[in-house]
Length: 254
Ligand SMILES: [Zn+2]
Image (tube, rainbow, N blue to C red; front, side, top):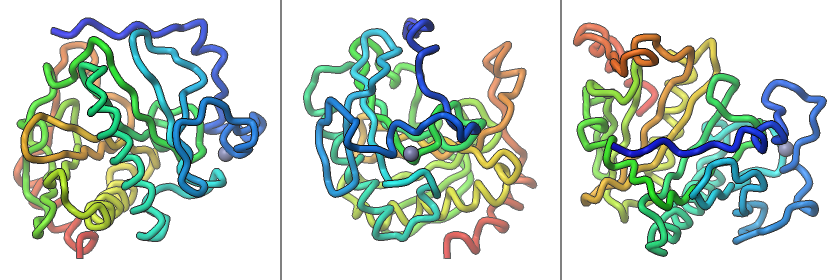
């Protein structure tokens, strides 16, 4: 079993937080003040996280847009693909460095997502001594089939990490990122239209589980189910509800 990562609470308190408060100046809106930049492509900027709150990690941030508005699913496919391709390449570069037990690549969006800054961004974090694959398996990426085409298979988890609703994209590591991005945008649109209609919050996470595929999990966010908090019991829906979701989501994947 992995040991918990240690979070520096004193440093965490100094982080800017503007998810719901416009009075706090956004640190990503003024690129001229940014430091420790790792790579740039137009207004896409990959840089070290100024607040390394997790011990034994290499924390980085990708600033995705120039301003605070919008999120991945509202951008044009061209723009969104550029963002996903950039992050995907940097994630693989970081994994290839072999400095880390595992590398996580994820995004928080919305007030219930656990994120602190509204400005569209994602994070790549190298974990020196923590391999998430000890707990997360291919089983967590399977479920009721929502969509399948030449490049990507989308399922609703029947073995979610937490539940209730987790959507999994599975694709070959060298699949065209434009197609993957389109399916990711569609999945996010469905999540924001359905389960996250009120919270307007989601996360997505990339996984390399040491097989031929890469996976993205899109998780609809609201209050964490108490049975998971207390007992680690994950919950999912029944076949009837899944059948409803299969039907309900179909127009989003056309
Ligand atoms: Zn901003």
